Image 1: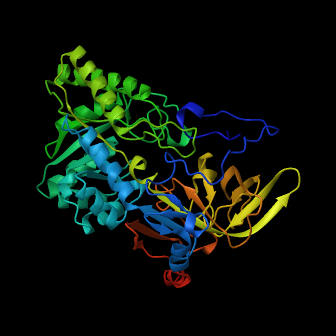
Image 2: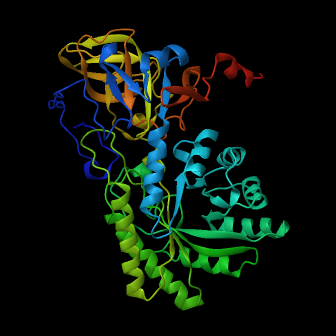
Image 3: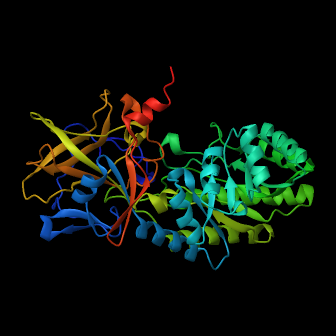
Length: 466
């Protein structure tokens, strides 16, 4: 167990003293199927090399370079189908949260698997439209959507716009009126639920930038203002309590409060809202101790919660929507690095430096995220050594995995792989220290395909016009 705060519910803020390092694993070669992509394995004929989608990481690294984001297409598609099927009986809408990982190919996978898509910016909307996603199957988020972003959403016929402020209500109504359109909206409400997760990914408490609070009356005022508008149509409410959550207790409290609010809206205005979007945020396994829920359990729990609360208040069951993002792309992705230097700090740990770092995975530095890492280019029967996987950036906080065990014979030129990096690593990648961003490659049935090519130094200079 890490001595650092973990961003997932049941282990949030647990701290181990310095003198208690994590216990060495029994087997450094084993790949936990809850953590690694569905097709991940070891090729005994190639010295125990890690394979994904039928391809060895040595070939992928040789062809595409490192660091390298590798995405198991079959795993992503299987998870998308699992969510669609889990919610199919209730005819609920499943939106893939594009902020987790968005490329044109990913958009096409989402559409082909029968999911809808949510976007959080004009750039994400542009990718979705360029990939052919029907605009009526898109919902648009954002706490500060610009005039241009709202105008494009209205002009292209985005299916749902999640309004997040009084300013936006006025702005959107004016933009829609100027174009002779009526846009369907949901009001994003904050329910005051203290989700058991990291502060930076908790989104339902009142003191933060998202949504309109139930407790202050802001949500009620937002509903009144939307109902008074001629060019935006209120169809429902949106509630999102946070990210990387491992149980549905917070959703139960949020659903009860939102349903009570639906009752109040109905009583005061005579309007019975027909949609309730419960957001996303349920977690994945980054390490073996994490215990995420499966889609069937999530669907049954959420639908039961809402149905019970609606029955208690005499309301018709609204059409439910959910927004899994990380749950689809996270476990499907790994990052492959090449080891550059190995530095033993006697009596403390071994520092293993790789050719990437916080420019391709900021999550560890940002909120203490934990990851699982394994030797990838070969297997080893050397004894496990307490290590820290670090990057090459000019920051002491440039850490990818705080505490892990690697074989004692790890050496420069070895490849290591970090699991569950399919969400938020590519999306949040930067050019810090002018490192070009890695390529993103999909693998399926032994065939690799470039989704986004590796940046070059020429790419970086092309925008530097000074």
